[in-house]
Length: 293
Image (tube, rainbow, N blue to C red; front, side, top):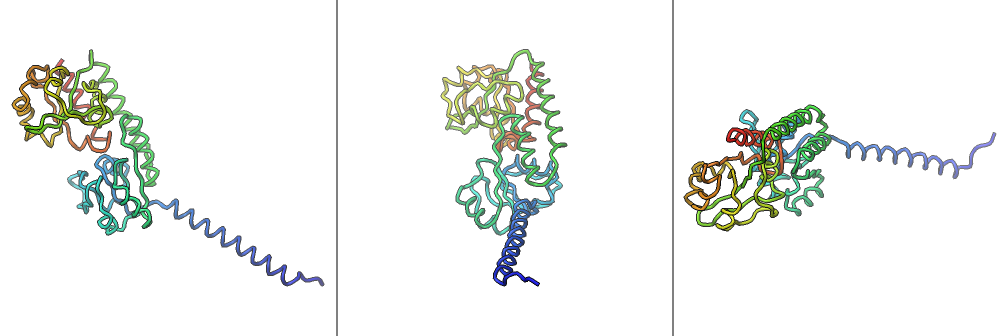
């Protein structure tokens, strides 16, 4: 009877074990990489709103200070502001996933969290309905939740907004401002959340620069807005817009100032790009515009 040489037999046995354990290790790594997170921190109101709509509320363990939770939702720890998140406060919650928008930070916080084993997901701040639908799909995949129902609901809202825009004979000229007595007005330009909301509602942003910039008194008159928008966190301070006319008398020379055509936008609809609250506010603004024709 012929037996294999001992050295060859041992070598083959070791190689088989190596392959077996190598395959097992690969399967283990793959399963970890594909594991659905159960402890999630959401930073940014629009992101949290999507997470809840997708049915991920049971995974949520903390939020940032820009998030407004539903009144009947359980109390959660608040871990700073999404642009200035503290490492210690986040790690104290023992999260598996931190999800937020493209402006979530600072960068060193995200780096330290990743090195501690926390998964970081940053969704682009949506400036269109298509981008919002993509964010819903991506977040659903990360959470292990189906996105079809939420996407369909959003498609229906976008379609309704498109029909509503088509009924307007011409788009209204709209100006969104942040106001402070004695410091003039800052207007929201291209690439901002107010700009996206204005377009969804069927309006035209009267300013064409990027981001937020200070407006001169002369520019206020020359822009001739039909509507002036501001965040509802300033509504009381601005007395529904009346205080704007006191601070900036030249506004009375514009169509919006002459008609006192002001609209207070839900501030949470302006955080982190277009979200579900943005769609609701765009419809309200559209109805305001339509009713004034």
